Image (cartoon, rainbow, N blue to C red; front, side, top):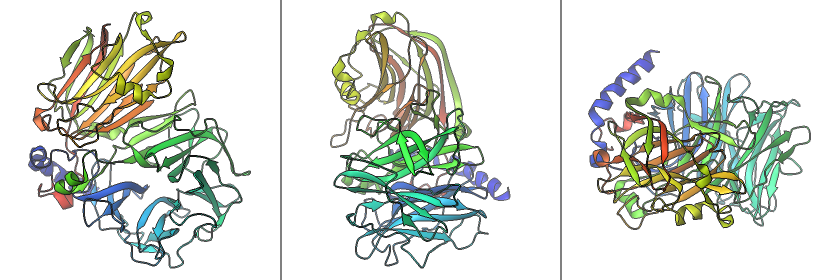
Length: 563
């Protein structure tokens, strides 16, 4: 408790000293999203809760702001998943089994409360192999030092698999037969594969005769995740829980598309059989339909929840990354559970964000006529948490959905962007908007009729996010599985200088975007509600807050020089 109190005292001082300097010196650095003070970062690795402390490891290049052929594991710890303390590097590429990089992996807590890491090493012959490491001193609350197992690699490259197609072991699960299981991502002839391995002692692993799952034409599967979810609760489930009340999620990252896709299905450890209820295709379920990749989840036993985080890469150029001295950040942690319909997952920012809330503003039952704008004032628009619900009537006036739009909602959002005048929509938020609206990122909905029912399309339009050229301004889109006749259309958006995370329909559809404005920076940014449809909509409720700056990797940045 004493260390926690000191930590938050430092936070109070840091907040006062540093909160005003970030926009001036580094306008795209974030205030409450995880990132190191400098250099390149990507995948979250081995997140876990252990003896009162949350641990986050991540892919890191200590030598500069670009990806390297020598990758390390960096390590930070937290008491609340919001404020983070940096530690020394956890893994460095020093041994024959990982001297060409320490790539991604996962944590497992073994019986006796003993954490262990499995990770991919690029060995001296540039083969991807799986390695193990354990903490040097379990009495150290931060687990600062790790020892690599002298018998590494514990899993070698399978026969017939290319040297660079075998990576990212998952958190292990223990079945009733006393054997541990993990999966490792791979491919053969463009068939994505989740190889299944079993072990009785966590050291000697045997590949099962058949993969847990495979799908042709999908390419390499990386950063896989496999975990149970309750069919009747929002609470989380430990990875080894197996009973009739759970379904299993298999998430895979498709390297060729840099997107995370998932399936929901039934798993039988007796048969080592996984049967998804939705097969993997490029139009299948995704955690997030924007910039969101290499995600990793873990079970949090303190709050009985599953927590998800992911790498969010930059939208500007490598030259920009070199100039600013850093690249990449992590999404804000999300709670994750199975929707009541058991057809998809639901995600929501973890409740700890409320620690950072201040300056709440509210709007109730405000009619927004077609073609109108309403500015949200009284909060810091570049650093905000916004919840809004829209109520619609006269839905019979909605335009018909073109059947060709169903297969590619992202293209539909690009063609029918925020400036398009439909009937019900576009309506939503303009985030990081400049005074003259030259710059704006629009997060919005459109409602259509389709075969006697109504369809809700959610879009995140970055086409006008910056006056700067040479950056990625892709527009993203996906449908939201709600009935606007029965339900209000809700949106929650986290805005943090250069990242915008949006949650539609209570978290059924999520879209993360990056923006690099040149005008809508810091205090110059505005937040507005808009309706470009011909039909009016009602803002039934809006709640918005400024979000205070979190203390993230403060020991390296307490001087504010890196902000």
